[in-house]
Length: 477
Image (cartoon, rainbow, N blue to C red; front, side, top):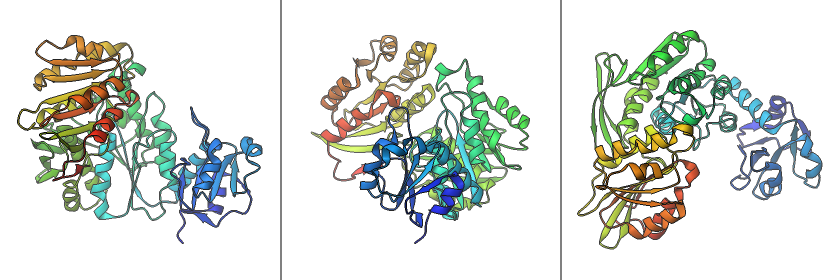
């Protein structure tokens, strides 16, 4: 059997103490007792809301072969007979194991940060690099203080390319994670007003994203968005960090990896990728100019790490949007079908505008409508009323005439839209979910987007639960 880690390696890396008869090794690592599988180690992390030690018995029942627990919690776990590695701090132990994974690996590491597009860019990198070697990448959006070390610790020793997503809500969060990951190549997708309530302005957000430069290996590369207003700031920050290999992507005439032309369609995009005299036609299997732009950064990374560019371009055609980030569903309803675009995972002003543009490009059938189902953008602070009200501009420019809203902050958008737009407002997500499930019609295109805290996934679930997949296509994921 091939182990991810032997027990001896874990003890040494984490400075842990064995308790009981340890197995020879483990096949995986989990912090979720519900989804752990046979042969994995369960790390009993104490979070803000729950303590993993309280779920140790469930982890064992679901197949955990080893527990990593805190010394302080050991007395309460004395009745358990499963083998354990005892450490001072479980999250700290996971970080140490992640650092050990990076040290033992010969993989080329690509890290992605930015205000918008991190997860989709990570998934494009996974696809684009896979033809050139074994890729290890974060699942979902594991981009924070526990998600990054967990992804590192899960990296098999024979990985050829590691792809990591690094996020933040506050200054000082990206730097330690970047120093842990030590990327060979770092991408900053864009700087936009996300988490604006925690920062004074966009330059402060750019400075926080620039912390990714702290971990780049000597001789490493950074890839920056040449179209973004913070490009010069980031370029100077990279130079100040001692980084010499600075590259750019975007539509800007001076971009090294340039999007020369964009042809958007309802479910995919065709773009022309240029580097010097090398011009390639690229089909990206998901819609939206924002995704096409980030595909240029992906192809830049592929080029810089020496992977197969032709195979990467071919792979991007197979891209499909993921749950909560543009996944499409064609659902059966009386009289035909309607299209659901699931953008429910998160939202900020930039990603809202991008999603509205995707809705504008979608084609309703017959008498169908384009319907924007929008919820609050969180962490906007004092800027919240204005950034919500300002969404009226892109909605009107896109010709969206049906807008369904929920959440206290979305009242500002409700009040800013003219009478020509048919607005439905409900105070809560549950009320809007009920309304949406009863109000969609054949031919509609319904786009659902909000910050994760609003729980707009419930609206998506309400529609998926009530309406079956249209039989001729199934669901597009």
